[in-house]
Length: 280
Length: 190
Image 1 (cartoon, rainbow over the protein chains, first blue to last red):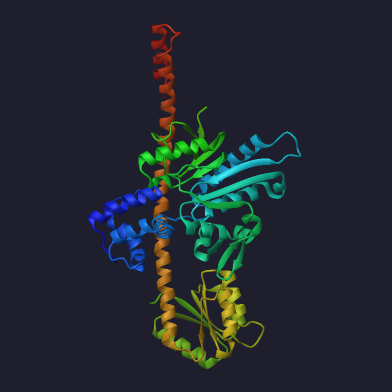
Image 2 (image 1 turned 180 degrees about the vertical axis):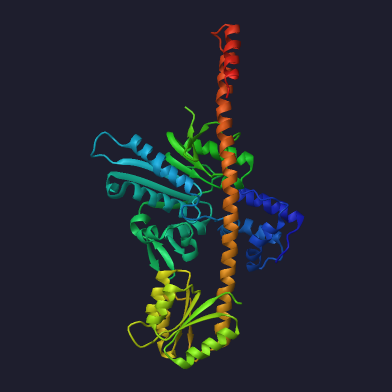
């Protein structure tokens, strides 16, 4: 494996931060090596500096995308940590549906949900399954817009395709749910059209402005800010507050905290989970 | 011990014997069935890691049916099909149904052992990944409890402090009222 020098560490760490917001600890050189050496070697680079220079010169940004794919962590699973989904099922979804149901029965209930770091899509599909199970046959009365965004092109691609191998699927999905929402495809499983039709995925760098996203009723931003510096986390949650409706709900990772990060949010407890709402 | 239990399903007694001997020699646990019916019965009542089944067998239950039965029972069971050269197309079809591999007759044992070893390594890796994940879940769960408690406590304290601040900076209240009101909030903290 190609070794990284102390000099290169500084340059590459800064570069990765610039393109993705991800802050990598420079004392952990193995992190850089295990994730970037194959890209460097594939491009025939003999040093990480050479890789950096090539990436900077690449107008099509293909190398930059490869580096982001390699650096971003895609550890996720269906219904990862039950808490948020219980919260959605028993508290947040019923409440937001109540708030958004128009007086006229002819009008649909509009609800917008955003999974801000959707990785390979498991979280958003889990939300879609939760919604279908909650409102069953009455889905026609609703207009649910579920958006998933991620910085990694390959993650967005897999999420859009909705196909998961048996290792990805078996973790967290009960058999009954699996058979209801997925079709067997060789040794893999593919999301059924009715579930796929509820969601959209696109690439988004959370460090950049959220242009054209609009406002959401529910935002999930779980386990992504942990890779950012404190200053970047503050900026991120401030932008998230701007993207949330005044009565909307925010869910962050179960070991994350907004104390000292965004005073615009207040934590609220429901059963054994926490969600956030904007201070009025 | 190689750690894997292998079910051999083949109607040819010679092949069954041969596979049994070779696999036992490599320290695998071996179960034998002379047709698909017996194979499925063994699968239902025993823990099996790998099924090694002939594709073509007399009766209604051939290799494909054994594959489907095994996968339906437990998706983690690996199935390797043994085929005659002429039925490679069917074997490829079977791969789409979840077979992990196929071997052409006559069986090349070096090849077979290599594949079994791969399955064994893969299982070991999956197990350690699962162990790590469980360890992570436990850590995450305990950390979450602490952090979420702190989060609520901090927010409650902050609200009280904000309250006190607004009292103390009030322009309409008399000074002594401000102080006594603020003290009142502080003294009544739980």
